[in-house]
Length: 373
Image (tube, rainbow, N blue to C red; front, side, top):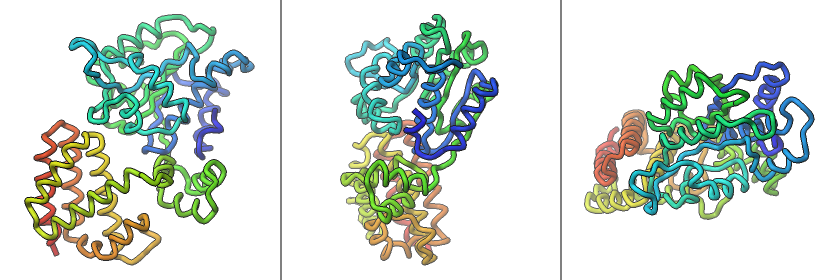
């Protein structure tokens, strides 16, 4: 399974060393940026633990893990509430087991957006409910079916609500026998401090450009020149590298939104900006946050473009074409206020503020900030 992990050789060796030296803690948390391979590493390590259990791998275990259907491997992941569910039902991972299985069988690299689409809830914010913690407690109370480890793999534990987090904390404080917890986290600061103190944290760095380049050549058939350009643009994320290979990339949509916002703000077209904000309000909160993160990246790139140092800029050809005329409007006087404006919008959207109001206010403030000299 480790052969599916792009790069990260140092982390692979560290995980295996923990087992070989019998220093494996009952709870590990892999932290790192999106696309760095945290989930791929966690899945590969879970498979390694369940295949061998300190012994020679068995054909039966390998066959089950090839389909990710091992009875001692328990996945926990954020879910949504479907209209068909009763009002008092707390969604749990088992409600979406079929969709999850389809997702991970396609590969260990995926985004929250892909998962939301699989569940049919693009406009919702997925969380891990207290119902999930209750279900996990029941599963882990049972004996291992294969006589070895039980592995609880929790994807994005920072999305646990407070009731769930407190119950998981108790599990981590008093873990069931022969149970290993693997937490895959992107925003550890959102977790309870008491949970962070109960796990051994391993920080996953961005993937080396050379590793992404080689994977693009071997797995995707790119030429060395094309692979080098994509790897540099990916900025250490295999998911971003895959995005750039897609003709209908979400980034193309975001670039159109960015260009429209900047042109209308510069022209002070308030009525059209109101229409733009209403359009933004329809795309769903997860996508809104991704747009704002994309916005922050382009602001940074346009600011750096002014220094005329191509080695410091990471833009697609379309983004660079727009930057040729636009970059001069992002300068020392406004780059920080614009970035802070986007950060506040991300926070407000995350707290379920009215999206129309957030984005209209965002657009109006851009009118003022773009003319700042």
